[in-house]
Length: 112
Length: 109
Image (cartoon, rainbow over all chains, first blue to last red; front, side):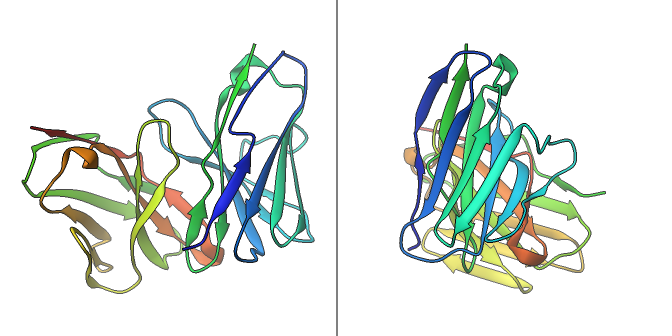
């Protein structure tokens, strides 16, 4: 099956710093990737749709200047959380679309 | 608006059969997907229904009725490892998924 990786799996940072999360499709090319955020015991909330070679499409309520998305190649999308604050602490999950969406293992971000 | 409804929690015993229902109201509908997520892990794809009817994959089956905006996931021969959260998700165009709130399944011995 399709494999999607994420790096890092876990990150702890100080408030005010920026954190970059990478999402890679390992065995297929993905024109479209998605970024989700999940708080404890809650559902996945779609943050944005990342399209290779074009600007990301953000969901309502998601600050595009805070969550920078770059999809520079067909196998890599990055999410940068800029000026992170404790309320940004969450589980961030990416997915890549082929016949369906295949999810990465997630990145747990803790902002102190 | 868009909404998906599924029960918040279900408890069943090992070896039993459990059905998790999902009703949806969305703009744009291509199909209904089901994902499993263990605590601390990422969602794992289980099943997809693009057409009405039943899809069977081993112990798991999924059903869709587009006219009723309804689907369900059926888990048979429950095992302890099936304890997890299960999400239904509507696929609209461009592979975009809208997730339900999730059903936490607890399998007891």
